[in-house]
Length: 226
Image 1 (tube, rainbow, N blue to C red):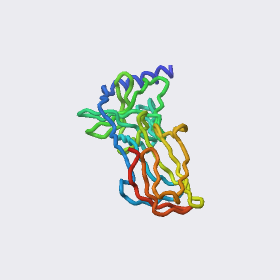
Image 2: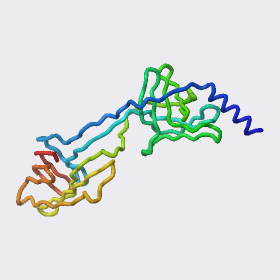
Image 3: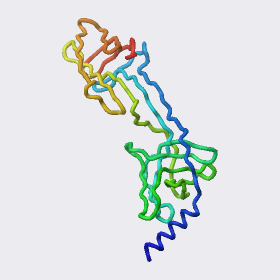
Image 4: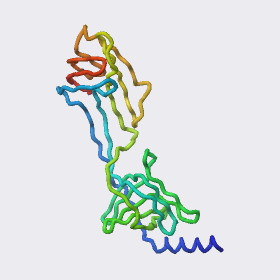
């Protein structure tokens, strides 16, 4: 009887909640990055990136600051971020993710499975949406809007790294990253003898070495990878 009574309470709460059909109309911002700029002069220390080029994907998100129970403990929301997935005239919809720092939701045994969260534009209430498109809300959840990098399959970055100098030779590391993970087959270490030339190149990138020590390097960017 105790569980049955709890089921009735939760059912009543969800019955009083509204109904929402989430929109999936949001596209994260994609920016092609290349730095330092061509023809600029830069200084890097050992272990620093000399050159970087790639695709950076950034998404609107909310960052939940506190743990809160919603709908008489039907759902418990834990701190972390939710990524935006869409919006309509009344609401903004956010999804769970598997990225580091992502928020999570736990439901009670009798509550419906959840699919995401919603922010009401009119009163900023935080709502949990279920698989039936019902939602239950709470205005005690503390959150703020933010922008976050997104791990995506087509994220790609190339970098050159300064590894130091021995004699008149400098060591440069090359790395490729796919979805924020280094690709082992596309990592390399290359030595350049500055007595032969003060211009070095790798995969289309060219640098003019102005000064190099075992602690730092000063250089001018002639061209990036592309």
